[in-house]
Amino acid sequence: MSFFWVNIGSSFNEVKEQNFLWAPQYGVKENGHTFKNAGWEAVKKVNEGDIIFCNKDRNIIYIAMAVKKAFPSDRPPSRSFDKWEIQGTKIEVDLITLKNPINVNSFYKIFMATHNRECKPLVFNSNGACTENYMCKIPSLAAKMIASLITDDVYIDFNSHIPVAKDVIGCSREVTIQARVGHGPYRDKLFKMWGGKCAVTGIDVESILTASHIVAWSISDDKEKVDPFNGLPLIPNLDKLFDRGMISFTDDGKLKFRDGLKNLLYDLNIPINSKLNRVFEENKKYLKRHRETFGFED
Image (cartoon, rainbow, N blue to C red; front, side, top):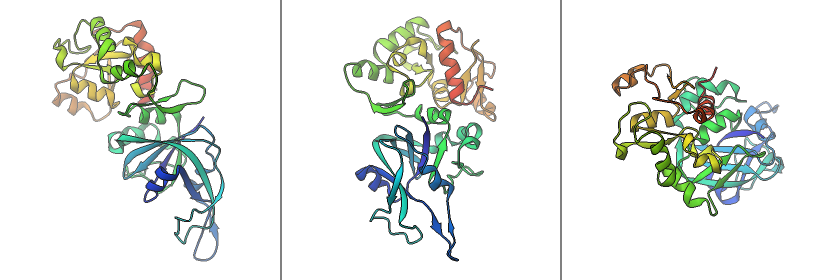
């Protein structure tokens, strides 16, 4: 199972309305010689069930799942750019439109530090701008990191044999959505475990605490979504840093933070030697996955 990033521009409506992605197989130089583009070549590698994150103007606006293997297909009538030859490659997809697009600026620095060099071709250049490559194959941990930032009622099941992007449906919807927003039994159980206090600061004003998932709701299975051991009660600034992968915690509760973040922690009055007041044994598998997802593991 593979994961991809695609940069879509003016074709974004076409992608949404007709549920396909397309790229030329080769281009032609002014001297008549043909050339291949690494971003076009990546399109040929997409197989049934692969997940594709669709970027437009530095926002992930769609999550696409290939419904069949990429196949040769002539250029769509809507594509008239004369530097593109007729021969191309097409991917038919099921598409989820995110009501709340994921802003690339919220994660590109982490992505560049931990995953970019493993992408083929690269997603970002050295200045943090998206490369001009149409499609890039990305590692699974990069896909998990992006997916963890989804705030819609959509999740990607990485735990099944074939990851599937889907909306929350069925009888579990109410319970899982409550867990998503930190309400209901999930929040009650989590706060009871921690005595109604922030897991780091000990602040006990429950009305300002967030029931923060360790492994994000959007990449957890149905059981993990409502497991109180997959959560930490945190004050808002810690929750936001943790949710965005700017900080994490070791299995013994010690704070880990990104390079260059020390001044921000100081400004937020968060000591760099902060730690979780306790760690349940059941927390550790989730903490490890959080560190892996956001590149804190060696």
